[in-house]
Image 1 (cartoon, one colour):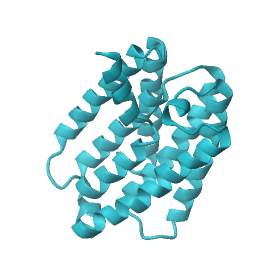
Image 2 (cartoon, one colour):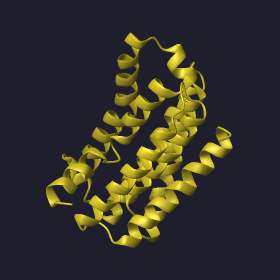
Image 3 (tube, one colour):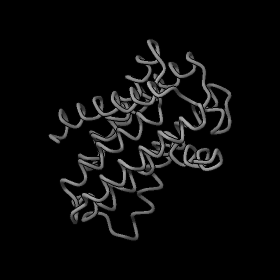
Image 4 (cartoon, one colour):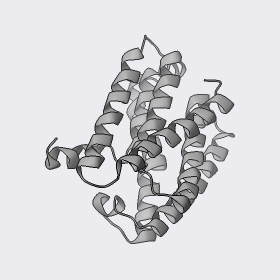
Length: 206
């Protein structure tokens, strides 16, 4: 893999974009959500959730850390990783709590809870060791795709495989850029799987 390709993959797979990808997957493929949202309303729905879960949190962290590009956000110090993850975790859990009073599909509520718990776990783990946030995020995306595939409009086993393969590609890209050691990528993926699977088992019955 060339360095240019690795940088491109690392950019589009950045953790700040994962919530948007996840929301698009949920509103298009989860049987209940897809059936209750009219096609012409899906982009509006996706935009609102993208602003809530990706854009606003990213802007908030960027202002807090005074890092204004994706590349800068990808090269945070240990203290910055700890503080930004903690702030995001609290924000996501606040959003999840707010959803309790709204008519929001359970899968979306659980997804936001998983975001919050994952961010807090990352904050805690970052105090002990460095792991790949990219790998952690795509492990979470894989668990979400498994949850969606069990209750999809059509058979969606292919999306689980595609997410797994793309997660591997992301890991290769991070290693190619020397952003992480192999162990940091492996532990990021393993802890991401354990954390997200636990949340979905508890709150969604995966």
